[in-house]
Length: 125
Image 1: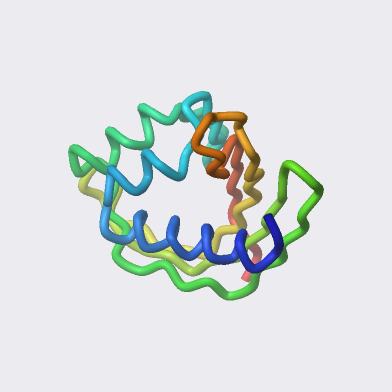
Image 2: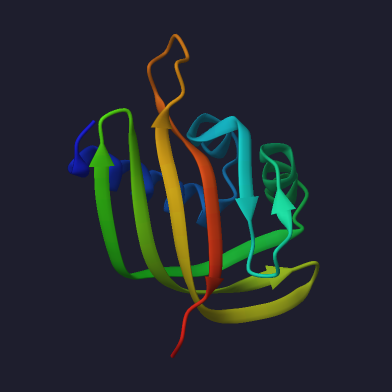
């Protein structure tokens, strides 16, 4: 996988998050995903998929403001700053976040790369 391939995966992930496309998210997230949100809560893949599936989280805007991609053989790291807004548990939210995601070849027979770990935090204005 090269930098352009990772950027394409990031774009697919963005679109899936905006449309709550659970099937696309399922294909992009590793089964043993660990995602640490801005509050420090750890989410599993099932947590993330269910949040989208049942409308707990709805992302209405997700604008990538900057992104770096580094590829290291069988894994890659992206650091992305986004402006996003939507609702969580019915409450509106908006802000600027920075995501760090680790993409990797999970060794599945399909050879697809998936997000294996991620963390986000509030980005300064």
